[in-house]
Image (cartoon, rainbow, N blue to C red; front, side, top):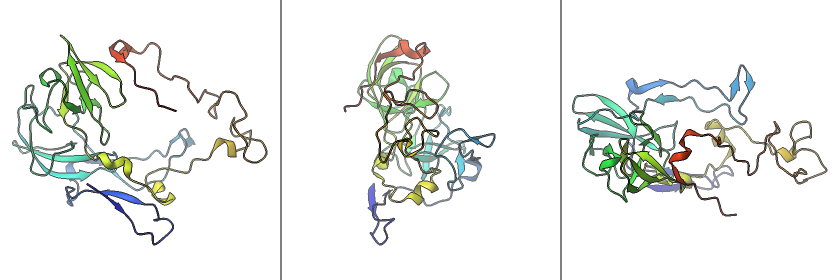
Length: 278
């Protein structure tokens, strides 16, 4: 991995940088594993329902096998590719039976690497096995929360969770946020951290690149009129002017907990995620 910093030959590229990897394949994506990706542009029935979305480069969706139900079949990674729909890299796997599938690439897995999915597979990078057969201290990713449903958590670039210990029925998992929760030991997880950990070091550099990524400009509420936003109005650069900041629709926007008080999974959380230091 290397961070490429562009020459400062224009004002737009003065601060632009991208992540370059020598392991990325230059082949075109597997045609049978592509699907149409219809853009909604943040609109419902033609009306904006999610602000700051729209435009963006035309993309095709890559069908990712998060369940990886090819149990006991050896697979060979034949390509590592970029996916425009996610921050991590994806790996094209060809199994011994001839089937090809995309999976989330873990850090340390390259073209030619061998992987296998099994209840008690060898504990090595890229293999997928049940939590009950993974020793404490290992970093895992693409973790199932409900057995058989497929990986649901720890799927973004550079993220990884750590197995803290095992109980009779559950494994104690420390997530990337610092939260410690119980997950059924019958759930599957992949050994290793998700690839492209340097993703957060990339600098967009210019407004046009944000537009390529389907992001439209975000206007500060304090720059608006009172009729347009609760923070609007005043002479010049005024502060918020309200005791409790709100969204344009009057909902609390600072410090308000949005998690449901009757969330079914509360009983599985041992320790909440640590709050950000101010």
